[in-house]
Length: 88
View 1 (cartoon, rainbow, N blue to C red):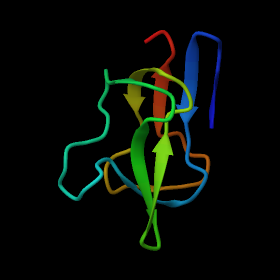
View 2 (view 1 turned 90 degrees about the horizontal axis):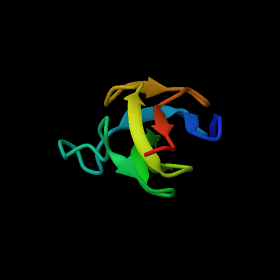
View 3 (view 1 turned 30 degrees about the vertical axis):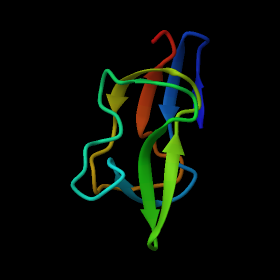
View 4 (view 1 turned 180 degrees about the vertical axis):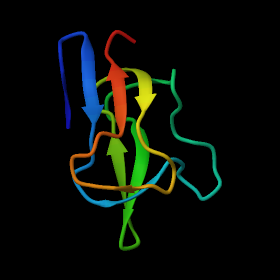
């Protein structure tokens, strides 16, 4: 799900279609924001598909440089969601 050079990781993309939820609970604080530093395996968002919640996790550690989707936006398989800079 995460591709790029050795220093910068490309977009993180979902393995399923659904609706992007930026927080663990409705109306809650987003899991990450631009500038957030994440570790590999840390949840970035949740994709809801037919009432099933699928966490999208960071493949690598680093800093979130871009968020490419909005809360509540429908997403497709392989659509870029986040960009992580591995340099931190």
